[in-house]
Amino acid sequence: MKIYHNPRCSKSRQTLALLEENNINAEIVLYLETAPNQQELGQLCDQLGMEPTAIIRFKEELAKELGISAKDERDRDEWLTIISKNPKLLERPIVSDGKKAVIGRPPENVLGLI
Image (cartoon, rainbow, N blue to C red; front, side):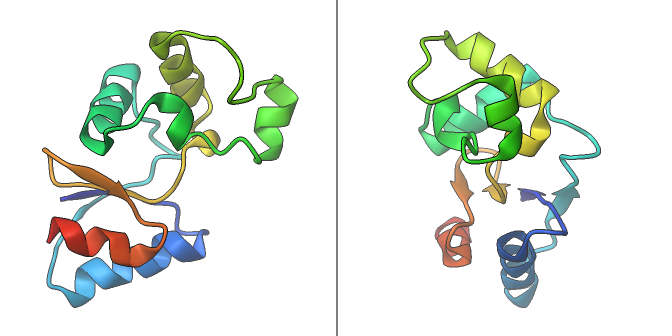
C-alpha cells in the first residue's frame, strides 16, 4: 500500500492512523516534497476510476491563482501536468494498493482496500 500524505492535513493524518490501526505498513509519499509525475498521476486516476479533474482541489487558492476550473476544456495530459507541477492541488490523501485506489475522505474509505 502507498499513501499520498500531507502531514498538515487532518484527514490525511486520520487516514494514516487508520491504516496503522489495521496493521498496514503503507509506504508514505510526501507528495508536496516529491511530486508524482504525470505517469504516476495517470495510474492513480485509472486506479481511482476518475479523471484528473476529480482529484484537483479547485477551491485551493493556487487554483484561483492559476486561473483553472473544472469547467476548463483541457486534455487529460494537460491536467496531469498541472497537478504534477502544482502538487498542492492534489486531493488528499490518496491510498493505493497498486491495483485500486481510494481518496481518504472520509478516512474510512480506505477500509475497502484492506
